[in-house]
Image (cartoon, rainbow, N blue to C red; front, side, top):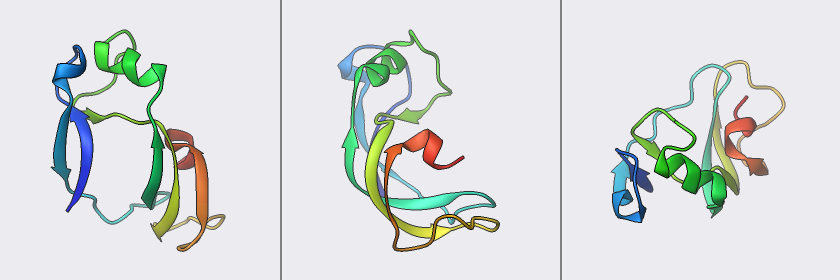
Length: 93
């Protein structure tokens, strides 16, 4: 079981929760990362407050660096053990 800072509703910092999250095996075109550093920036604040809407529940932190643990079917440019960094949402597309 992994941990993440999540929020289930929009609001101030009081909506943030340290929670257990299930991390499934990667599906087709996906990768699973073991994060070593995660950036929390203004976009995360905008998402938490609802200025930029995101599907809820969600996690804070859109940028990061880490190691690829597993890759899904069809992923050819990244392999397990690779170190990656960047915009987490774009890394997976």
